[in-house]
Image (cartoon, rainbow, N blue to C red; front, side, top):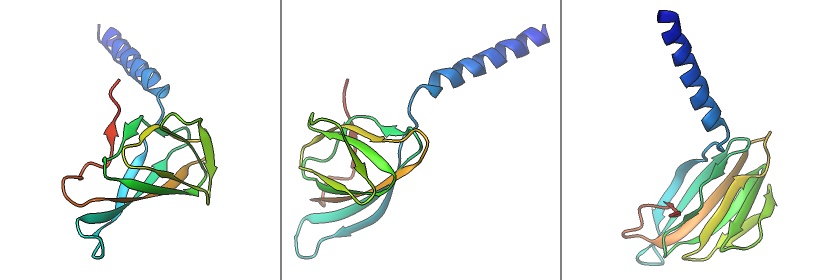
Amino acid sequence: MFSRFLAAVAFAALSITTASAGEPAPAKVTVVFDQPLPNAPGKSMKVVLVEYAPGGASPAHTHPQSAFIYATVLEGAVRSSVNGSPEKVYQAGEHFIEEPGSFHGVSANASDTEPSRLMAVFVLDSSNEEQLVTPAKH
């Protein structure tokens, strides 16, 4: 009886591992800078480091309506598509921008074997813009 229980637990654990193995690892996002802009009242600059594991990705999302974003790839390569544009792979040292109100449909590591990192600089309204990423509704 106990061995059947252990077998059921092992099967359940294997099923969970298999189900989640097909999904890309989520990106790790760290705010590394957050400062009001003294020469632009009501505006702030926030900088985030986005780290992708091999095969990692972020779900489709938007950013605050006031946010202008400059992103540069620091390591590896990143696949991106903004506002329905064709996917493009950006290598280390390359950059892209996102206009306020943009939809970021694809944001992923372009490699299944190497990590990638990018730095994103947000210039946005200082008030009521605490959430930098809003997942897309399906």
